[in-house]
Amino acid sequence: MTITCISPIDGSVYAERQALSGDKAMAAAQDARTAQSHWATRPLDERIALVQAGVAKVGEMNDEIVPELAWQMGRPIRYGGEFGGFNERAGYMSSIAHEALAPIEIEDSDAFWRMIKRAPLGVVLVVAPWNYPYMTAINSVAPALIAGNSVVLKHASQTLLVGERMAAAFHAAGVPKDVFQNVFLDHATTSELIAANAFDFVNFTGSVGGGIAMERAAAGTFTGVGTELGGKDPGYVREDANLEAAVDTLIDGAMFNSGQCCCGIERIYVHESLFKPFVEKATAIVQDYKLGNPLEQETTLGPMAHVRFANEVRAQIKEAIDTGATAHVPTFAEDDGGAYLSPQILTDVTHSMRVMRDESFGPVVGIMPVKDDAEAIALMNDSEFGLTASVWTEDAAHAEALADQIQTGTVFMNRADYLDPALCWTGYKNTGRGGALSPIGYHNLTRVKSYHFKKA
Image 1 (tube, rainbow, N blue to C red):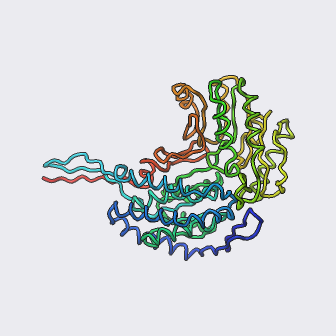
Image 2 (cartoon, one colour):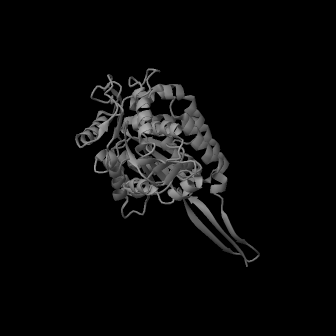
Image 3 (tube, rainbow, N blue to C red):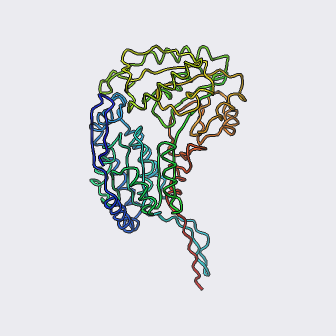
């Protein structure tokens, strides 16, 4: 089977790779298992240094990576790629490794030595998405390797070249080839490997349907599965919010990367006293975007990664307008009816509309007025998803009280669409389960092992 990346820039075939056969894929997983036992015996400081060197090698490729990403998934080159976040996340996980992986000593007396250690799981399969292909991958790749696991990386077809880049960089830095492998697999082979216990842990970022497939494949194997799936992240602007800051940040969170962000803002609730000026300011910002070829420096909004993604967003917008929503942004001249999609702000929306319920993952946001906190919380929680929420207020104590009631993995105050590597990245409801980064990220990539030694 051939795996193909169709460029959203012009619809051309940008890259093709042959998927591994079942036998070759199983052999790769077995090689990873064999290599892992030796990798785990190498000193922690050595593993940290090799991972950091691999990250640095990726940074050396950035001038080539940035246009390559534009060709693969459409992000404008003006934004410079992902190395800042990639480096930040790997660096933080390196800095906390000793503490996060430290043994817990219970007793060291003349009679007993009792200890709890953290042991690597073994072989970790990382299935990464296309929207932030470097940053999402490193969330698991760096701590998994540092903790002593071997890693098999499978990337989305839309970003075929990312895994090759990462593997080449880490191998050049000295990470053994069998310890960190990039593979090309079709869905059926991936499921077959999981069902055959080829891996000890699977970390998947992608659709709800994909997450269900991963869990079904792992059923009965006792293989751990961590998932980050869909999202419909809300923003709430209280009456005491800084209006300018709220508009700038929430609209950027809704539209950046053509709305293709895991924790992007997809619905906004604004106190009725600020609703009209919020919509006016938001509309002015969006109308000023430059939709176009992501290889051109002046482009601020590139195409969506694939025509079918754009068509889903168009369908949600049309259905909403047909049932009473108001569109505030005229169609851009550059909107070609394909991957190049005009951004849109909708009001007069309700939760009966798909655009306020289903994941859009595109440059559209619905905005609703609310009368108070209770209405806002009820609407924010009226979703099958729960990744992040953004609350805008000058009262931090009140924001914490609201956050305790919001059903998400992360709650922001006065910011949005950001992943802090010191905090656990996790979801709720159909967004998935598990957690990446922070010390908890290490805990999820290791197992506890108890030592009970009687000395006399």
